[in-house]
Image (tube, rainbow, N blue to C red; front, side):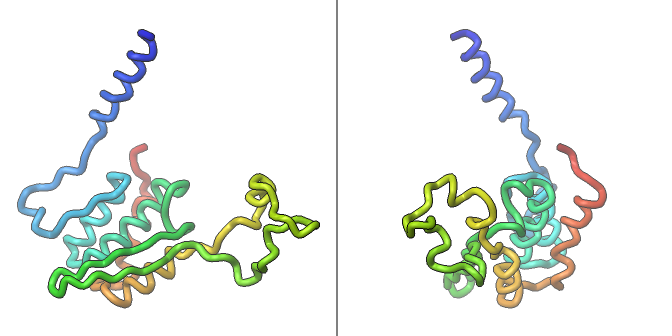
Length: 167
């Protein structure tokens, strides 16, 4: 029991030691961004400071997340975007979830007897892999709400990939 309590205490206090992103108070007027990784958050903030829209910042953060945590998020997957226009109050969404490949058929997950495959058989191999939708989502969002040039959104992620980052 003592070992278990020590483990949980260590885990809790380890979380408190995670460094945050600190910016000068004068820079906070550019807006606020948040992400799953400090480097992605920095990328989003950089884009806001450069005059980008919130949509631009979100795209730059997704691209940075592709570099720093490719197993969890990024251009190889799908997502949803919810955009709120502060002036009109209008909400818009873009569905960028993965889709089935164009060659997929209705019987894709049926066995030789026409019965549904078991879970393990259905997910093993490439049959269950979807076509990523995040790049299309980004393209649509950039056309509607982007302010900065498309290539500019990639710069923070490229810098992370080329120069590295703390792990």
